[in-house]
Length: 213
Image (cartoon, rainbow, N blue to C red; front, side):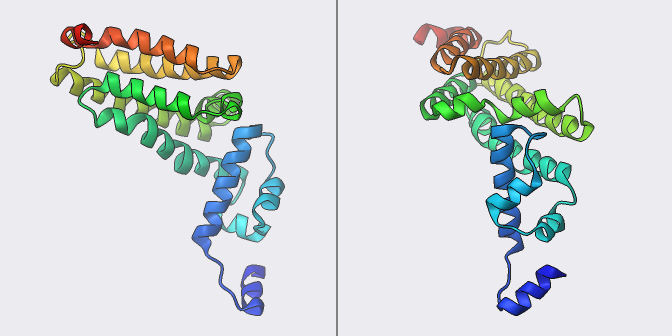
């Protein structure tokens, strides 16, 4: 009601899509920097300039806002950067190595310190909130399924070794990637972790490909 009164008196109309986007972006940034449990809704309101009434119009509580961050920011960002380029390539191992290289080249010291938002939230919230656990698990499932599909495509295109178990290898790749990012967070350097990952994944390439590398 206060939002409607404000709009009538100031002669303006709010953009609900833009408001929701601002809340999500601020929430994501603050959760990434401080963790979900530490972040307060008041801090997000101060950061965005959005009223409490507008926030509760879009998100009935803090958990709903956190769930939306997972579903609408973390999941699509991971898919766009880590999954789609690999699935769309005929040579998924090389594509994955390129993604790692690009991640390392574009990663700032601050990003290294903050670590992976998916991994951070999994460690923080999966044992204390079922809503977070299920949503985070769905992202990992999509990641594994995407890489498994990519590896199968690579086998069909003879860029991945025929004896590779695609499902098991995809699960290991996701685990090793998250482990590498965790190591980078601790050591504040990406190069070592990225080199270890790339060296191992060369083993998965088709023998003819390996002989050319």
